[in-house]
Amino acid sequence: MNKRPLYLLYTAFFWITACTKNTLPDKAYRVVRNINYNGVSVDVVIDKPQNDTVDVLVVYHGTVAFDSKILEAAYNTLDGFKRILNRSDMMIVSVAYPEENLLMGDNIVQAEAALLWVKNKAQQELSITTRKIFIAGHSQGGYLVTRLNTMHPTNGVIANGPGPLNMGYRCQQEELGLIGVSIACTGLRARYGSPTVNPAPYFDRSLLNFTNGHKSDILFVQGLEDSPIQLYSWPGFKQNITACINCRERLFVELPNAGHTALFESSTAKTEFNKFIQLR
Image 1 (cartoon, rainbow, N blue to C red):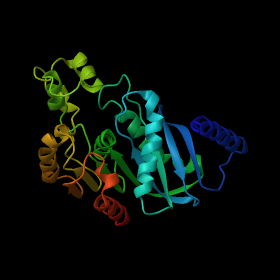
Image 2 (image 1 turned 30 degrees about the vertical axis):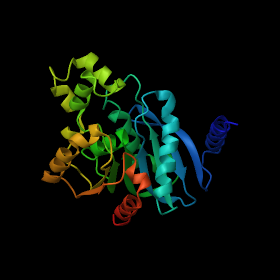
Image 3 (image 1 turned 45 degrees about the vertical axis):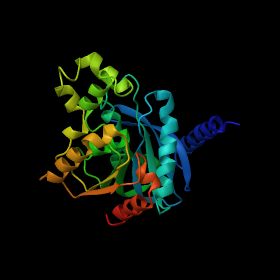
């Protein structure tokens, strides 16, 4: 039996009851909520612990392409980070950012709105006290948190297998028939033409274009058995990040026997993830 519809029904009942009472229950809960910051709305899954004074981990899922899948991806990402987190007193907010009918990187608007809501509105709207705020992401989620770190300070950032690192290279490989066609490259090509003829807009959306001005300490986790597309640009990306002169601390965990989901599979990565949060 599929329990998700029942769970969503419970979530709706929870919020209707809470709003009717003009308060939230003083207990642990997990709910879906549509939040709004400066006119930008996005769905988030909120996993609150028993305590009302919390550190917060805001997490971002990887690519799923279709918006019918993003809420499921947000749940899975929340559970993935919760499993590797070695503390139970932290609130996790998983952002179901949109992807469908958007060019790669345009969803930074929703990603930013979720972070700013947590920083500026969550206390009032959830009747809690927030202390430290961390952001973390996997794959395209890692891309988003890396970009967010050039925009807003937090207490720390964790990016696992962040990408796309080099959008132009990826889309060129697709044009040559060396890898499968992606929705991301199809959309960019329709807007800008071939990356070989017009490389600039592809670079503008690549993570290689966001290697300066990082406002908070950031931990990168990269499995060295990730896809060739990722590993082709990883050394250059790491070199550019390392060379940054206006960035906070940058840390790298490279794992020779791990792939794209290294953070969730490697005991070394899990240890470094928790140590990073503990020390900040």
